[in-house]
Length: 217
Image 1: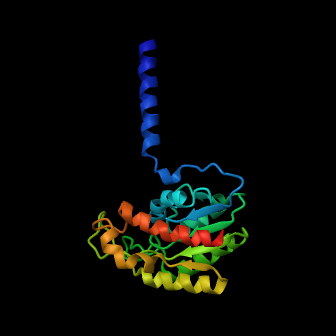
Image 2: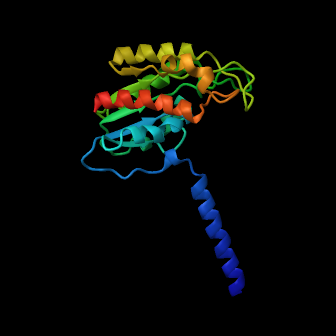
Image 3: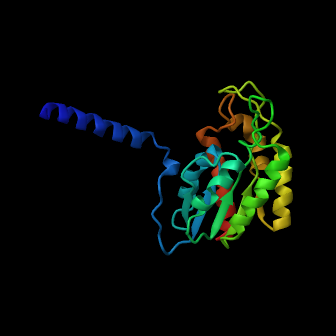
């Protein structure tokens, strides 16, 4: 019986260590330095890619938090925004929704069609403005032509960026145009047949994100 319990405990320990190692480092919680401003990053897997390098670039200048998951489409944002914002006092919030919204589903429609994207984004901006934080909108980065791995197709990200830019201009929110920033080097920095980025690509995005955040601190 003791031997059985020993093996069970060993397996549990190995599983726990494995789970910890497999967790994306961008999702690790941040311990605040109370002397520094608090920044929240909201976004999908693209933002997860640049979270850690942004933290390194702003080390000693700001506490860089992010939502503890992939932000997904605006519908997921609306379902979770209160929980993500919590009761923290945010100085700057850098945010994006878009790639998941414009993804084609099995019926050929986009996950969130343009009219609903605009409606949802306006509602999310209301929640974000209510925090009193300085807001920065990041435009959605380019979508490569298919075939992609895994196989999927998307609508035109520039259409959604136009919708978002219109809202941000109305609301007086700073736009961090990551689409324009990465476009000249997109083919060089993207993973093959993927809308995600190599390490160098995430680092390149982090340069621009950190620069825009630092301007607002």
